[in-house]
Length: 66
Image 1 (cartoon, one colour):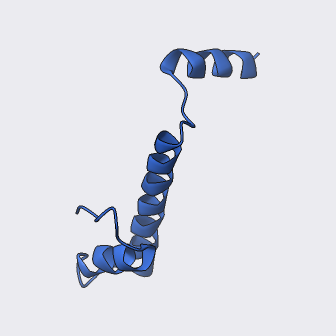
Image 2 (cartoon, rainbow, N blue to C red):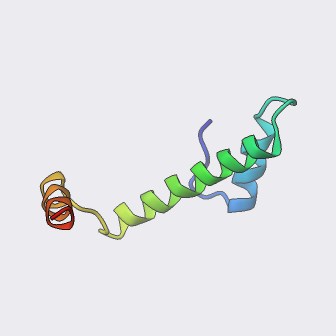
């Protein structure tokens, strides 16, 4: 399911829920909305430059695991 970038969170949530099976549980709906929120946050992070290269991430993890 593709969500319109200009859509509000409410409209996106309603679209996702409307596309689910009638037998979907509350847990199923909450999970899908959680994933949608995390993807949107990731897109904002990329757009605002809050990202690390693979090399930077490896260096950070190596230092953290010492």
